[in-house]
Amino acid sequence: MKITIIGINNRFPEFTEEVQTIIASANFFAGGNRHYELVKQFLPDNYHWSSIVVPLSALFEDIQSKKGHWVVFASGDPLFFGIGNTLKREFPDAEIRVLPHFNSLQMLAHRLGINYGEYLVVSLTGRPWQAFDKALIEGVRCLAILTDRKKTPIEIARRMISYGYTNYRLFYGEKMGGDEERVLALDLDEVVNLDFKHPNCFFLKKTNDAIPAGGIPDTEFEPLEGRPRMITKMPVRLTTLALMQLHRREVLWDVGACTGSVSIEARLKHPHLQVTAFEIRPESEGIIHRNAQKFQAPGIHLVTGDYLKAKKKEFVAPDAVFIGGYGGKMEEVLDDVNCYLKPGGVIGFNSVSQKSRNRFPDWCFQNGFEITNQHQIQVDDHNPIQVFIAAKETKRKDAK
Image (cartoon, rainbow, N blue to C red; front, side, top):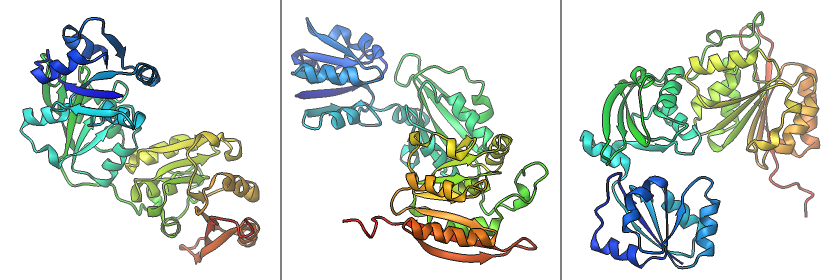
């Protein structure tokens, strides 16, 4: 199987003789609707066209069933977050040749006269917010953003503003390389009213060096009404999170999140983490959301309701779980956590009572967990807290 991927811009193409020869010799063609309108007059007689639309399964089946030379038209550089990478992955044995054009961000940088090599590229085209949120929390100074029809410039600007990341200026490009090309320099509050068109992209550049700070004083969090002391105290949560070695982890579940203090500290200190917070109290939903916005911690997935009844199979399995509350059902919650926690993962557990200090080690012993750290901390006039870190065995000792 032979696939030639040709990058084009948004204007009527001026193909070289080599490219015209390739097109004339091909049997099958694919591209988006916009690409078809630009290239249809170059196609040979009796051509077969396959539209590139999501999901891509129809395209893959078409290519697989029709053996021959395929020419695929793509925007800009097909290997720059483009269809080229998808086709290489889907057809590893195919003979693939790529003839790229400038991508949209390169063209925008050329119009602006900036060094785009200084910019971290984040694609939000069909992708989650995680990489973008991570870059904001880490304080990346220069970002280059690829958008789609859901994560539009307006939605991105609104997210940044709601989480306090207003110290960026935006350099916007629309329909780059086409007759309707438009380039603008905007503040974020101007972007939310932008009359934009697809496709578009933009650069973000910080206007100052401010970054969100961890180690948040307990009094800064919005508390549960009437229960201001119901929060994992700063020295305890920072110690617990440090002992859990979250820099080595990928997914954290915060069970009994309450005000969201643990989730927020974990997100700010380790923005690579996927964080899911579970909390039974419905009033905590607004509290956690507002606290996350206040302390600039986007990307925390909140699940409200009884943890034991939550549909967790749809979530990515954790390799770290913090137990902040269990509603009197410690063993049941731990048994459930054990069903999802990856081998080698850890549980962080804070014990207030002597009863739980005895029961947690007993549960660990019975379920193949090793207590790797145990420390007692007392904050001011609060009761002493026993901090436990327990690691799940990678393989049971009695396994053959």
